Image (tube, rainbow, N blue to C red; front, side, top):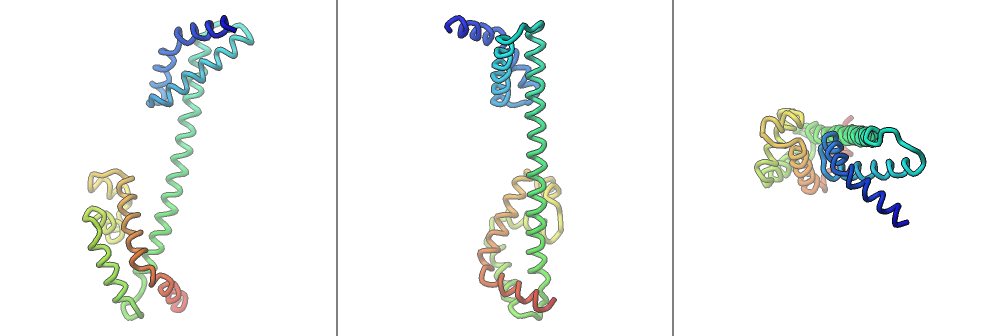
Length: 186
């Protein structure tokens, strides 16, 4: 058993640094590169125990390349899911805002609701209010707001979520009434 451990230690010392650097050049993340390098060395070790490998370095680098490719594909899928969820949430939020904006001035409670919404928006930090107004009054997309204000897309999402949460809290007593009015007048 000691000879097996010693052989793996030799393999590790011979190839770990190159494996890590190669993996890092593909995935651009130290922790992921370290995981890929270690998993690849274990795969190589297992393969070497089972059969003779003609070119150890070629086999190892092929395993690293495939693991890096799997990792990047997974990131891409995860990003698509996050974007789809963000779009859905934005659509839902837009619907709610449009529902509130769609209430005619003559309708019951509209002046009171508008005043509460305005007071709520005035109490928000200026950046949050600015992001929300750009989104809802100028109908700018998240990336357009981020570019205009020099903040990240996640920052835009944070500010919009913060504003909507504040509006939801301040208008909580009116949301059911608004919904019922929309059903009644539609």
